[in-house]
Amino acid sequence: MARERFVLLGVARARAEWFRRIGQWSTSAVIPAEFVRCISLAEVRARLDGGRRFSAVLLDGALPGVDRDLLAAARDAGVPVIVVDDGSGRAWVDLGASAVLADPFDRESLLEALAAHAEMVGVAAVDHDAGRRADTDPRHGDLVAVTGPGGTGASTAAIALAQGLAAGDHGTVLLADLARNADQAMLHDSRAVVPGVQELVEAHRAGIPSAAAIHDQTFAVDGRGYRLLLGLRRPRHWVTIRAQALDATLDALQRSFDVVVADIDPDVEGEADTGSLDVEDRHLLSRATAIRASAVVVVGAPGMKGLHSLVRVLLDLVALGVPAERLLPVVMGAPRSPRARADITTSLGALARASLSTAADRLAAPIFLPTRRVDRALRDGVPLPAPLPGLLAAAVAAVRSRAGLRALPGANGHMGTLITPGDLPLFTSQEP
Image 1 (cartoon, rainbow, N blue to C red):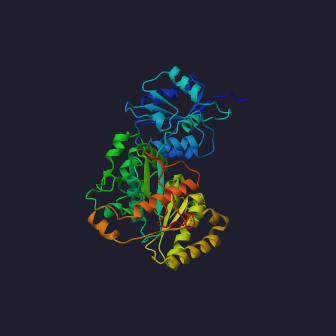
Image 2: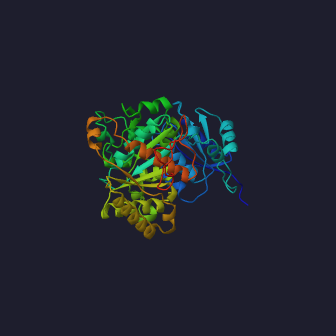
Image 3: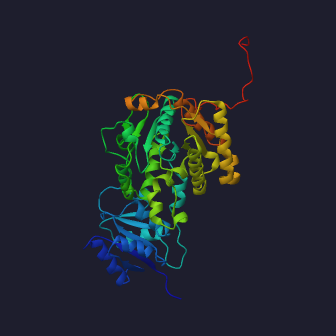
C-alpha cells in the first residue's frame, strides 16, 4: 500500500521565499508531502474542482485575489486553507482560513499546522472549523425584504416600512437598497453616489469592517428615523458582487442594526431554473436576501395585470424556498370601496390557489395601502403620511408572528396586532 502523505496545493507571488522552501522540503522528503505548485488563483480553483484529493491549500496573503470567496471555495471542496501572512494584519481565520503562518516559518511550524488542520490522503477530510462557525453565528438583527414588479410602489413601501419600524421604537433601522435598478438614491434626493453597497461588499471580500465603519457607509434620513445604504450606481455593476462577500455583508448589517429593510428586485431565477450560472449571479442580491429574510413583503397593483404579476412573484419566491407563511401580499393604491377590496382579495386567493396549490393556504391575506399624498412627501423629503407606515409595520409583525418567529427588537418587543373583520366585539357609545 502506498505511504500516506500530505498533498499540498499552493500559489504565491513570484520568487516568494517560503514557496521555494516548501518545494525543496517536499522534493528532499524533509516533510511527508507532495507539493503541487500553481501559477494562478484560477488554476487553484480549477484543481479544487477537478476531483483530486488535497490535504490543504497554501495561499500567499499578499495576492490580491485571496479573499473570502476563494477561501469559501476551498472549504466547500473540503480542503482547509493555510494562509502565509504578509503582515497586513487581516483576520484570515475569521475570513475562513484554518490556520495562519507568519513568514518566515520553519518546517516544524508547517508540520504543526498540517497536523492540526489537514489530513493525509487516504483519510477522510474534515472541516475542523465548520462546527465553530455554526455555533458562534453572531447575527441578531432582523431582516425584512420588500419586492414587487416594476412600477407597483415596492421602493415606496420599503421606505414606509423602515419609517414605521423606526417610529415603533424598535432600535436602529437600516433601509438597504439591494436592487439592481436601485431607486432609493433618487427617492431620497441623495446628492452622494458613494459609498454604497458596492463599497461595503468589496470591504468584506478580504476583511471584516467594524460596526463603526459599516455605520459610516450609511446616511441618516432626517425626519424618518432610519439610515440608508445606497445601492448599485449602475445595473451592470452586479458583476462586482460576490456570493461569499455578500453573505458576510448581510451578516454584518444584521449585527450592526436591529432591523434591516432590504429593497430587492422580484427576479430570483437561478441555475436550476435557467441552466445558467450567470443568471443566478445576476440575481444574487435578491436571492440571498429573500432566502434569509424573516418576512418578504410583495407589492402589487390592483387590476387584472397587477394581481397576475403579484401572484407570479409569490410563485417564484416559493419556488426559491421562501416559506409561504413568511410572504405578505400588499396592494398599493387599492380602491377605497370595501366591495372592490373584497373582490381583489377573492381574485388574489383564486389565483394563488391555482398557482401555489397547498402553499396558498399558508399565505397571509393581502393588505391594502393608500397612496394619497405619498408622491408629495417623497418630493419634499418629509415623512410619509399616516397610516401607511404604521399599517405596513403592523402587518409585517403579524406575518412574523404567524410564522412563529420572535418579536422584532425594541423597547416593548411588540408591533401591535393586525385586526381582521370579526375579531372585535360590537360596542356602543354608552359602554365603558
